[in-house]
Amino acid sequence: MNNNLTLEQARKRIISHISRVATEKVLLTQAVGRVCGVSYRAPYALPGYNQSLYDGYALSIPERGVGDQEIRYRLSGEIAAGDNGKQTITPGCACRIMTGALVPRGTWKIVPQERCVEQAGHVVVAKEIAVDIDDNIRKKGSRLRKGTTVASHGKRLTPMHLARLADFGVDEVEVYRLPKVHYFCTGSELVDKITNKQPGKKFSSNRFQLAGLIQQAGALGVGLGSVEDKRQQLESMLTEAAADNPAMIISTGGMGPGKYDLLEETFQRVGGKTVFSALRLRPGKSVLFGILGNSLYFGLPGPPPAVHALFYALIRPALMAAGGESSWKPKTVHACLESDIVIAKAETLSLHEGMMFQHRERCLVRLPSPTEIPNCYLLCQAGRKNFRRGSVVAVLPFSP
Image (cartoon, rainbow, N blue to C red; front, side):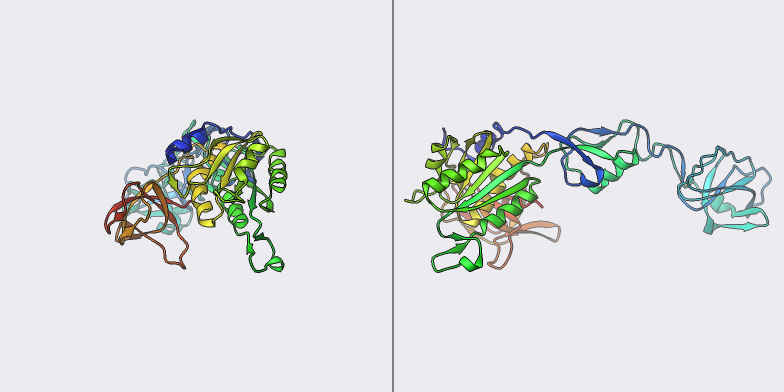
């Protein structure tokens, strides 16, 4: 066991223990936000035929001897969207056509109806319009070629993916199951209801925060409530959490060096195997990662800001990987500091809440005010206490 890991080393150690969840098929209407379990390719080109871009007239090549100002075509029929009769326009003729309709053979171009005049069985078009280079025809295969990837394995499905799949008649899609996460909070001071609030007690806000973070990460959270700092109760909670073989178990609290911080000891008593229990990271000095039964286990410290930071730094990437996502690695960006920052303890890499924003085409970041909700973390490198205004720093944005 190595308790002197960097953040990157810890991520690699965690990922080495990840097992992807199985796949399942769901209706297309239920697939948005799910991770695609296989790649889907276009079985044929789209559109499958030449389409009219406008309600208007399909014109043939004009006959010889037309006048200088306008061209007249004999109106020979009409094609509505959905008509599949094989029509042909002969020279000197035009055909009324609707948006999306199959363009008949012999068509030179489509002219929108507002640029034509229909007179006594003929269509009259100004010559400069008729000879314009834009033919207003969506060509067969111009949107998607046969074999083009429509939805990629390991990517989250968006409404646009669903529309593309539906274009090919797909009504159900193979996706990864939602990883199941059991979570609970430890602390004899915690209460879950306002009726239980007494002096010396506080609300268990972490359970609400974890519920949201797990859902945002594309997983299925199962809250097990709170448990007091007592060995027997902790043993029962850990045993219950592992019984259903979830992909992951998360707990908060009980990770310090204090008298009632019993989590790691109890975890090992019920058969848990510790992989690491501290990092060269703030927050992260008191964090546990291990294996309990068939589940990955994360023991986080109790303060809600630390829970949020470690979830983004360690747990979210692990959940995304377990859920089949190919792009699970956290993506950092760089921004300029809007003001000076002084780091009190700079011996390790530290995560600090930040506010990132755009100003005059520049990406800026600063520390949030007490009333602001942060939208990123500043990754302040070890060994540096002073970060001056204008310095470029690495930033980890919060993901939706």
